[in-house]
Length: 466
View 1 (cartoon, rainbow, N blue to C red):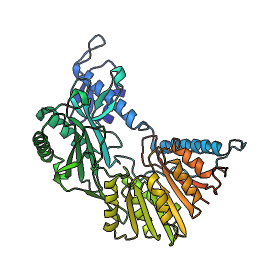
View 2 (tube, rainbow, N blue to C red):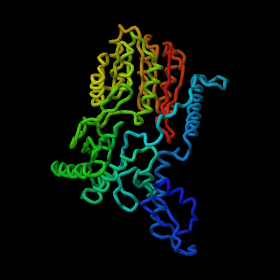
View 3 (cartoon, rainbow, N blue to C red):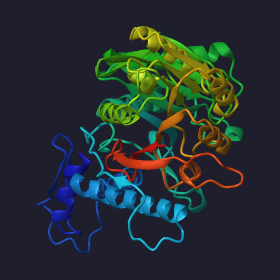
View 4 (spheres, helix red, strand yellow):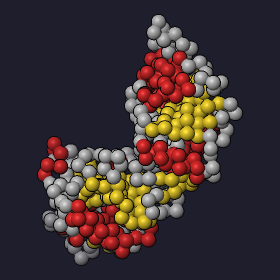
């Protein structure tokens, strides 16, 4: 709707009076008005103008490239990735006079889908500037009194079914609940956030997070049941195959800290990538762009190219997606992941796909990696996948990778290669020193893949050999 509104508003003179036709999503000039340069704009026009400004502010914050044609977006990402490689080259070869970069850099591989691609949305429950509860996303700054929550309708990366659930929860909170939004823990309020996950069938999982404050358990359960009944009676109710809630006094809590309580439907949803099926839990890590994720995993598998006698070590493996997709081409796979629930999903996914040569271990990578590598002494070849958070992995892990001569092939997946993770790349590739005498890796290829159209981000696959 807002895209249509913009096109019409731009065509009309700034001081004319408009009539908003909600049924068609268009704006018409009020022909009954005469020259109205000296008249005040109507309240309807003011509301529409505010809605348009809110939409612009939110879209520019969440999808800053949304006004740019997709081909131009890819060119911008090509340029950014080239600058990242230039930066890495200068760190590894500070005295070089060459204008080239240290590796072969591919053009950014486009996402197979660019509209409404997100399979996961985390909505805030906060207030707008008029004091109304909104289930949407926040923009602005508290320090300047511009912080407000805006409905996420019509964002180009967000599917309408997700925002429909948010809208119906907003209606319930505004019209049927006595609870307030919880913006500050010390100031009271209960409603905090709504997480929506979906799969290729558009089956929906909803997870509502609340702050219990001083409420009794039966009061919480009663309100959650009322909320569930309201959502199931809405037009999106048939797609809601799973509804959870989580009571948490923390900003963010794991299932171990604060359990997710299932109040409707099945405990998981399932997603398909190629010939593989994966179980998704409330806090599972799963790439938000499913179709582009297949391109990512296929590219990593091709770059890793494990041999029949290779053992693949998957660091920060999440629910095991990448490791399982190379398991049939290797001797075995060992995945390490901090989240216990993600490891449970990974083990389930292995059984679900009849993969019997994969094992997943819960714990911190920096604590488990060394003993696991010691147990792999008999393995003639070790291939490693590193897929950490934006901060990269501990430098001690990089040292262990360099010291192990059987690690000849390493693929690093980075969503922010110009951040702290670049230290990992430098440590893998720098020449031997007194402290690090082991053979360095060579960065053979860098392949960007656009998992996040209309944003400044993309995934960068770095293929290291020695």
